[in-house]
Length: 601
Ligand SMILES: Nc1nc2c(c(=O)[nH]1)N[C@H]1C(S)=C(S)[C@@H](COP(=O)(O)O)O[C@H]1N2
Ligand SMILES: [Mo]
Image 1: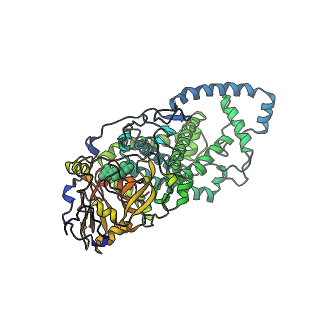
Image 2: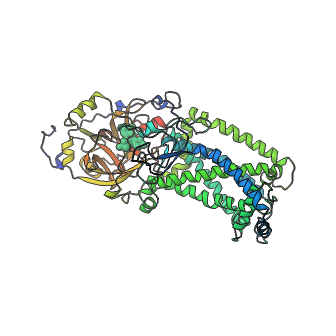
Image 3: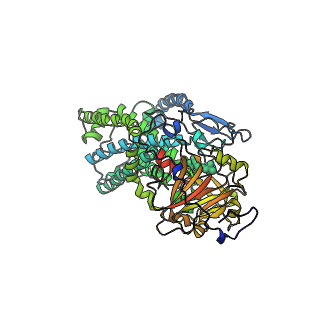
């Protein structure tokens, strides 16, 4: 069928089979990337961030660098000063008769129930080791994920200048500055893997190892409750607080309490272990899940109580707790009778032999080798990391994929003032010509396994039933934003094109090339195309979609992360599988940056 003459609105049903059957596949890059080298992700150069800063006070105006920022490195001298003052005060007050009386009444440990177990069983030692081993990878990959959007916020709007924490310079004023440009590099020994924008691989590590860590934690919970060990980790009387105060005075006055860990922890140990095991660990899981679009868009309360950014900020504060805990814990283990303490945890015995030390030393060799090897291994075998990660966390990620995201809608007042840009902008002449002609010559080409291959121009698209939604965008990098999208429901497109029963995947092709060359594309499961919140948007916040956000047409599928929402769409193809499309992994980022095609968590 000939293209419709300008200005003529044709009834939807009559948009006919003008679509050529030619696919856009030959414009894809089909290289099989199997290593991460210097040219990876378009050869993005390293960029290190800045020392962590916390915003104190709103500052003047709403400028991006404005406000007062406190450099957290100051905490080191301030902490040392406070420690010295604390020691002086503790030594002083310890002489006071009232304080001495208090310390006699509360020597530091609370009474344990008579049936509480004594000592540490060997399973506890194993679990303790596995926990520390796994946490190394979780923390390092978590830092890499943070570095992909090195700012934290308390609202769902990731507005530059409104973050409360950053490890990056203020956001430049360039309106087309992208979130990818904002990502920073971590040294290879710190991050996992750490290279700038290596979040795809970092996520496999983080989420994959998380499943093992959770499994270890569940076994730990079961064992401590079935052996009575829990009694040694849960405060059973309010006197834990005065006892902790007493212990704090003893530590600070450098006249340390008697170590009784084999039998019973002192008040401060008890509180620290209780918080770590029963508050911080579950909070790590809950705040982690709070960031996923899969849960947020389906269980609205998750998102209203807990916007992705609150979840992300709290997730970071849980990390801070763990790091603080590890520092103090290790310091005290080493300074309060290291041999005996190491025997407790590594040899299940209460004496000062060297046995525990040597087992500990051997375990540290394992830790150090794994630590040093993890990043280079990841760069040499990224597909292995991707596969193992997917085997571990994939089933959980898939769990929520099949539920419609209908509840994930917001109201006008939720719309974000600032919506980050992302991705690589289209640069081809083809696109520039269409853009300068206001997309009058644009045609969306829909073909593949459909009864009715079609070509539609913008005017015809605008004449189709209008669909609107106000939804939240979740970029894999960590930023979010709410916008109102206007356009055509994918259901309408399905009705027009009539996919054949064999069609299982829908490929969206972009005018824009990805960073390594070849056009950007993504494969979406066909069942998600008839979800209520899946649409082709040509308007954003009641204006024509801008260049930066994907003009003339972009995809919205609110069950998915931002990277799957192709911008600058030029074609849609229905296929049976995506093995022969591009690199064969279901999307540009999956082929090139080791993302997963099912990653709604
Ligand atoms: N063609 C194309 N589409 C793309 C990208 C891209 O690089 N190229 N980036 C994706 C990513 S990672 C995100 S988060 C969103 C960002 O959309 P926005 O710029 O409107 O915020 O677009 C997605 N669509
Ligand atoms: Mo993204």
